[in-house]
Picture 1 (cartoon, rainbow, N blue to C red):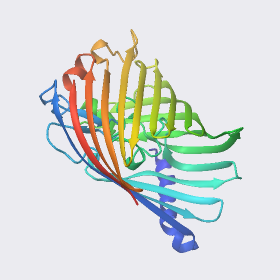
Picture 2: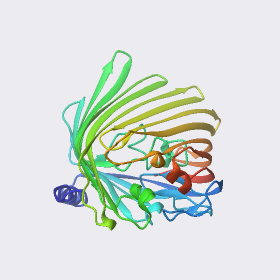
Picture 3: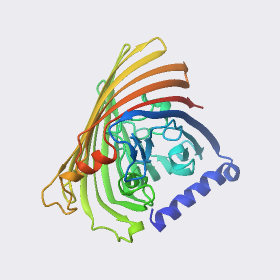
Picture 4: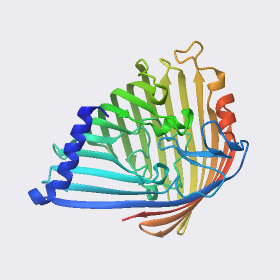
Length: 379
């Protein structure tokens, strides 16, 4: 974050802490927790790879550099979060969320803090630090209880920027029998010591990433048992390998598009999500999708997912990437979820990861089979 963004977030955090006592405002809070455990049980790469991970290995969360190795580990998917809201009046509120993740040695991180003002029944403006709505589950991606998997599908979820500092305008709408919401958002994000980039530059490396001039919109519509979502966003991107003394790379334009659909009919679930990134100003393009089908049986849910991620590297690209740098893989997973109560669940997940990448990624990660379990709770 820039110095100005840091100061704004500090002021908002101070208000969040001080406001209830000083102004006798209403304060509400909630929390969530995931206790996970897992390991890779087989794979095509063995021993410590170039990045510093003991393989066979599988990336569980790109954004947080969460990965499973060949021994049982509870850190990759375990997390604890708290969210609080100060209600100054019927129209004005302040919300903050902190998360402690096992993948980051349980350090506490500020995920969001923002002021929200309701202009009228249909329009709300928010200012501060929020989650970039790149994906269907972006806003609740830390709350494991809200989705079927132990970890979200790695082929679509996970990018070098997760949050942004800026402005959001939300407009609710009604189109006949369809209800929905449209969000317009804009801002910037600078992520110091990026976890995402450690998966490529090394666990001991230090890299920064910056998205500037973020401008985007999303629309969500639902009716009965169907919900659909469209998203478009663009920004400039930069990065630097601090541990190698690099300066910021030149700004490169990116455009990101997303689409998703959810069918929840009787006891059947069907979901689809598509993600497309145009980064021709740097290396090329990215395409990812996931398809899932599930069936509820009393308190159980059986859920099957297939996902694919692939890059297209342009010839003579500015980043000088080659076919050896190509990343392409797919994952087929099966989850069995058991609802213990309306606020807690147990999950068992098996992942079959197949790697079709160029030389570097295939030699460092490769194929993997992984088993993981989790206990999710909201409170």
